[in-house]
Picture 1 (cartoon, rainbow, N blue to C red):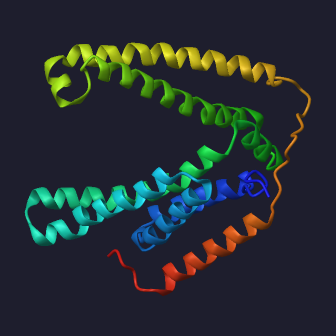
Picture 2 (cartoon, rainbow, N blue to C red):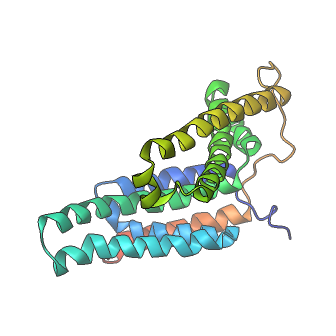
Length: 235
């Protein structure tokens, strides 16, 4: 069975991202952080994104040490500020980890089809679908610009200290040009796909709730029950 057939329904992924974000950002959100982190790691492993699967626990462990252990070992105002920042940033980390699966595995066409089934107004669905394509393109362009700057020695603390204005200029100007070019390309692609047509488009792969979605829902329910019933590891 191909990975495509094992993919989740885009609507399941959207609901999952919203539910995890609400849970970890709530006043008692730290209770849900470890379980949402396990979910984000599991999704990265399922997707085959090994760098993300390894990076999420490493960054979370660093934030846990800085947020919970460092103020105990070395109490002072600076470590207190770092601790408060890490306590909140770890929530964003797990929310971004879950959202990264949605961005990496959902095409703009699948997202638009999911929004059509929910009868979301077209201006909103088209805007979100274009944003889903726009940011990865800009990220790729930014990586290319940074590689070019690295060859010229304009990256890092030493490069920024020696040429601060030139470093900002060599990054900002190409990024503005790349962003404008990407927006024009995406606009042309949207027009070719029938954006603005009064007819309702059809999808070759209509979103359907399948067995992988059911497994994920049961897994999320089990993690939520564990978060509510077991003692909270992050207090």
